[in-house]
Amino acid sequence: MIRTSNAYREGLRDGREIWIDNERVTDVTKHPAFKPIVDVKARMYDMAFDPGYQPALTYLENGGRHSIFHRPPRQTSDWSDKTTALDLVLKDIGGVVTRVGDETVGEMWSLQDGRDVLAEIDPRFADNIDRHIRAVVENDVFHVSANTDPKGDRSRPPQDQDPDMMVHVVKETDAGIIIRGAKYETAAAYADQAFLKPTIGAWTNEKLSDYAVGCIVQMGARGVKHICRSGFAGRGSVADYPLANRFDEIDVLMVLDDVLIPWEDVFFYRHTRAAQHIRATLHRYSAFPYVLRLQYVADMMIGAALWNAKQTGLDKLQAVREKLADLVCYREGIAAHLIAAITMAQRSPAGLLMPHQSMLYAGRVFGCSNLPQMMHIARELCGGQICVTPNAAAFETAGSSSWLAKFYTLNEQWEAEDRRKLLAFARDLLNSDYAGHRLTFVQFAQAPHFNHLNAVYNSFDFAGPLDFVRKAAGLSDKVTGGV
Image (cartoon, rainbow, N blue to C red; front, side, top):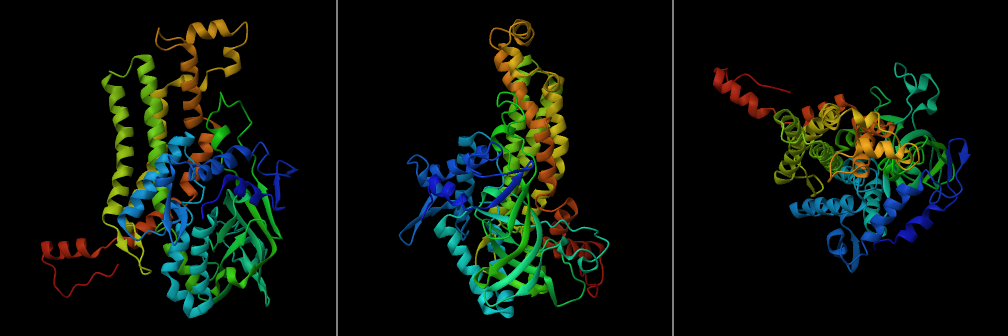
């Protein structure tokens, strides 16, 4: 059944060990660095009960009401339903959040597509993934993804340095496996569980490796420690940093200090073939909501830039319109890839409907690789005032307020306060520490650029171009094109 916001918050009060800025967090739901983003996730739970939102955010199945985000996609409408639901959520909260569960649950669907691989290792493992997918749906779990290890010296295998630089199994017991190491994970401190899997192959030609492990880790389990980066919330006022103070998603070094993983939570263990399968297919579903969020980032850049042009009276200039058109082409390019990926969706080995793979991965490359350039275009359109405007308090303080009112009032329609609000929003979107953090996150959150390109290469059907050129160039039929 769908979960209440109170149940979500109460579930976080499980004694989990969280550290931020040399402080042990006693209640993650109330700590100033976490409360804003916990409230955003809680709002998502509340929206599912709101009569105005419930029909679009939930569905009925087997006598229960469940989140539309967790429904495994079996038909095209399932994807359009998820798109509609995300649109409602982001417009309601007034910003973009990434790690809130819907964009990571698809990674377990990818593993279900490799169910036969798991069954070869141990039939229990295949059953485990089926059961966990049902559990996420039935319990409305906030599920994230534990993916990136510290790695250490990458020129050396983990066995030749501190072995904990990559997560590995240190012991097998009747109750389950015991793992050590660490993972970087966004939102782990205020989530319920994480799907842990290898970042890269820490092996050469081995069929078996203690580093080839995939499992579910409960965020409040004994031995799990959350060591967080400093938050952006609270560094300045909400008036000055409206995005950072509401939507900062805290990143965590999740230390696994001899954590017991019960056998029922293990998906694969030691077998490198299973690990290689999940790395190759990990984002075949989750890349869709990930890239979809970039469309909303593009909308915010277009909106901020165009409002600035309207405020300053430059919206009629051809040069301004051309730059706005560049932003529009970026936005529409993302939308086109996503629409095409669903229109040409493919049936997966598990019978799910996965977005057209090469189209989806090409869209991810387009969205991620062009974002830095688009942010710079938006900065140009917003102008240099986003980096020189005083804070909100200065607009209210005697001695400075009258002068700021004079120089930031544009005309009878655009007074100083609206001007200040737009510049503060644009600064936080494009120019703040938070903006820089978000840009880096986009570049690496689903692996670095070369991996994005590798996914395109591995998913594209080269047979068509090869056959076309063979016939056009008159090549011999004996020529074969292995790619």
